[in-house]
Image (cartoon, rainbow, N blue to C red; front, side, top):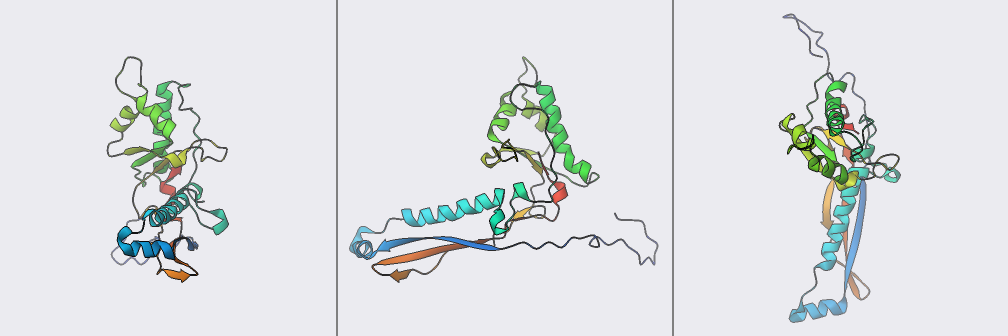
Length: 234
């Protein structure tokens, strides 16, 4: 906390004195593709080489990045957003499936959205809510009251100016017991970031027997957050 000071004060509170040192792993991973000697000879005759294999290699790397970003990889010591150890958890008690009154669902959304501010004494300013697809479709399609054109989601956004609510496939079944997950956070690299140490990189092609192999590599440090208390996983 900042405090009032005298003109010659030398006891200003340190913002870093309670810091906790944390070390995060950086892991390399990769895939490869190859073209045979005959394919290369045919390409020299004007037939060209298909780009399907290089594109598949890039896709495999991007999919790996995405999986690390959300789920991490415990065997490699990498954290993802959903298993980062310092992000608080909040237990939702109302089902978003039509079994509860829409007003109770709205109240639960409001309670979830307020958690970061409550945990940080109103210093957190979240602006993003992520929901599993079925939960997003429910709140975006369900009227708040019978005969109304205003849905649960529209009412929520009307009382949360500047917020974004999105559907995220990776939140489906991502809870500890297989339930869906919701995430509230402030979308800002200073708040949470996936450390892409090395993006998709193709190494020089190497001759191997009667083929030419191209190795593709990348490096990830997983998800890192300096302010995990400003997020909540529901």
